Image 1 (cartoon, rainbow, N blue to C red):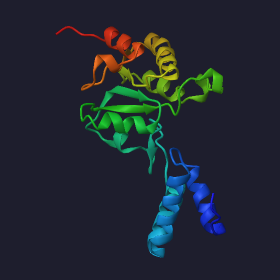
Image 2: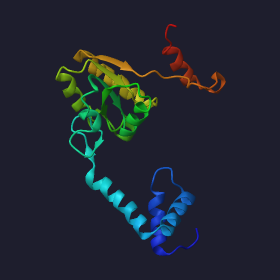
Image 3: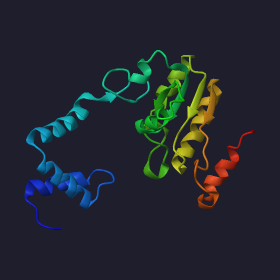
Image 4: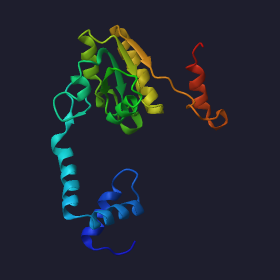
Amino acid sequence: MPDFAEPLARLINEFKRLPGIGQKSAQRLAFHVLRVSREDAEHLAQSIVDVKDKLGLCTLCNNISDSDLCPFCRDSARDPKVVCVVEEPLGIIGIETTRQFEGRYHVLHGALSPLRGVGPESLRIKGLVERIGQGEIQEVIIATNPTVEGEATAVYLARLLKPLGVKVTRIGMGIPVGSDLEFSDEVTISKAMEGRREM
């Protein structure tokens, strides 16, 4: 690695700590910051500090929020009887882009992973059970990721929540629209076959 002035080298190292950013990308970002005006650099720095200082978690669903309740929980037009469970706040964005779901959310902040020491007590499941106990929720849609951890979390939640008297469903998974069967792995095809529906 070339020798950079200490402040620039430190900035490159900080950028490298971000997910998906390698040495070259970190250098590009650092040199971009070096080229922009001081005012633009201060705006970037202040935005980073504001994210740490001004954001927290919604007291109802655990989504990222700048107030007690996130925009989805505050929205009276959304159906409180249907709750979609996601692993991370980013999962909400994927569902919202469809413009199809009009219910509310619950964010677990992770998935079960015994190998990494993540058990049910590490996830934000208690709040979901309490919400169901209040009697308003009729359906829980489990939208955890289609990974080993996500599947284990979905199975655990289904076993935990069904006895509480709510309908528990899992999002459909399988072959993406626009792809070919020949490029799909056996797990994807298996899930597609399991999730088939009558036409």
